[in-house]
Amino acid sequence: MKKLILSVMMLCAIAPSFYAQKIKGSDTVLPLAQKEAEVFMKSNKQSVSVIGGGSGVGIAALMEGTTDMAMASRSMKLNEKLKCKEAGKTIVEKIIAYDALAVVVNPSNPVSKLTRQQLEGIFTGKITNWNQVGGPNMKIIPYSRETSSGTYEFFKEHVLLNKNYMNSILSMPATGAIIQSVSQTKGAIGYVGLAYINKSVKAIKASFDGKTFITPSMANAINKTYPIVRPLYFYYDKKDEAKNIAFVNFVFSKEGQKIVQEIGYVPLKK
Image (tube, rainbow, N blue to C red; front, side, top):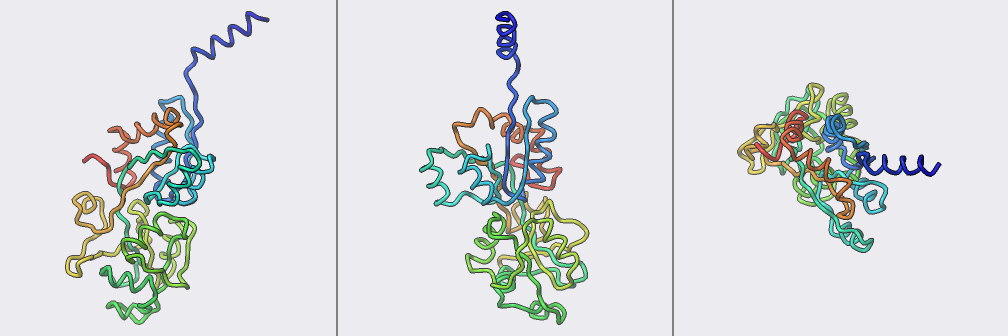
């Protein structure tokens, strides 16, 4: 019996470590992290489970210790960093890719370009009809992500310049829900990550100077002409670095960054 126990202990000592890693957070990062995990697990003895819920949800889970790593489409807020510090956590921030945030409308809508000021007016409720921005006499129906979303926060900060969304805005729990709602509603408008754009919606050209209107695209995000581009993040506790670093390094690798571009986001390296 002692020999059997000793043999098992020796096998465990020489066997490769097998980690079950949990990643949670941003719906924007979700399709990228899922694909990265799928490829990573083919050649690594590490299980990686990835679920969405929003950047705020992922960061909260990290603070609570119910996830190994948080995905986010915004940077951590000061109060979140303070809570982590109070909990004895030293948070590591990794930018894994960039995303162009696209404004989308129903394909039947003839409006094809909007200024930042017009977008602000639409999402704060000051502009309520498409005829106010060169379109048909049709009510504007804005869709937004819910407040736990990093995309919600980023759009509010960089496009609305921190002005509040209109009270009656329709909040969606996931990016896919915005795509579906805009595709089915003639007067709708919403905003999504570049990788989510498909033929069921029409992406709008945007201008921050009121003169030059730029299409949201991979090329325009890379050459920095498109004005609404943001970093995408992984966050984890430094004490868990051994558990997270293999997957993080894979995402940073040439193969990992190739997946970034294949999914529809902007790689760190050209």
